[in-house]
Length: 371
Image (cartoon, rainbow, N blue to C red):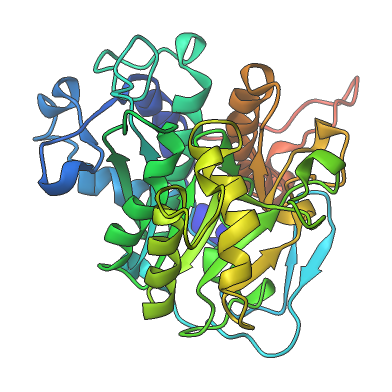
């Protein structure tokens, strides 16, 4: 059944669309204490009082009903909002939903509990919401829509290195409980909320049980090249598959700045930007250089944003490295509005015979009865 058919048979869905926006306006989240400082988002105290009427499972079901994907995981093409068609090469490799076997994770050493941040337990005020909180909510929504698992992993900062260095080991630990995990920075967003990630795995030819990591390339600029002149992979969007070699790679990445024998001068990147990203580019991807070790995701599709002035437009994943204060929240709003208002527009067109009335002076309008 198409989205339009679902709306026509159940017009209450449109009312729920509006209710959904109101829910978001006061939805905030808190994290329980769990092993290894792993935090899942849970409803805040404000929502707990209303749990008898609307529990979180109902909210998840509502979200999945409203945003139910219309794109088949194994479909050969996807048409974006601009009407451009994107396809896959060869037969689809991923044909069944991964569900909770796929996880999406945000990793941070900070509590993020100040006003407007993601762990602020006060009702959400969009005007005051921090851009990074908006990015994390995009990840949380995307996971809910497709039935994936979502985690906010709060790590402990190591005193002698940049906080980004906690990401490879945290990714490895959570990956052991899943088939695929996506580590994504809070200033990056999923552009098309209704597009299943399995379809992107097919487009990028991430081979099941073979490809260890898939990472987007950075813009092809001199400052984005490693010591050998090769464009670096951006560590802000990493797709990892639960394979022994993946864990070997993540362990090597973690140990790089501490092993001067195996990785000479890697310790230089303990703190200077781009820290762990440059270490991966200069050392790890050359050590792990088999065919399926690292899959390069095109920069135009998995990095950047339209206003970046580069070839990286963020077709499927937008990473707002610059101007995030100006562009990140609008990017999150656009992803929600496009999905929701696109559904409303389909309904509008489907009901045009009912709602479009031509004004003809001198002609009495037909009376309409309401039941």
